[in-house]
Length: 121
Image (cartoon, rainbow, N blue to C red; front, side, top):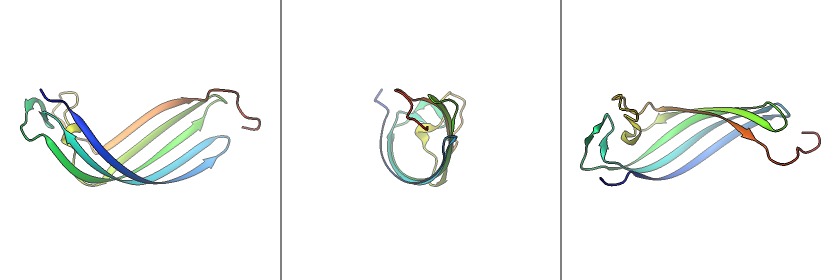
């Protein structure tokens, strides 16, 4: 087996609105260039492929919301989707279900702020 790897370059334009001390909302549009290398079929991870490097460009549109919970903790959610470009086979069949790349991605998480909070924040 040969390794799975990726090289990418991304250019993002981000617009954010802050609502101190409650949180922030951001939207972005981005362009990506990806060069993916993998040894499996994006629709069936048990099937090997020979020509496994693919280069392509895609455009993304996304947004995030971050909410201040306490002076030390924030929670956030992020969603973005592909608005131009094709599916990435390297992101398909991740869990063996035979599904292609969804073209919609999301994350959620929490942020912990170290140190003492600044006065007035």
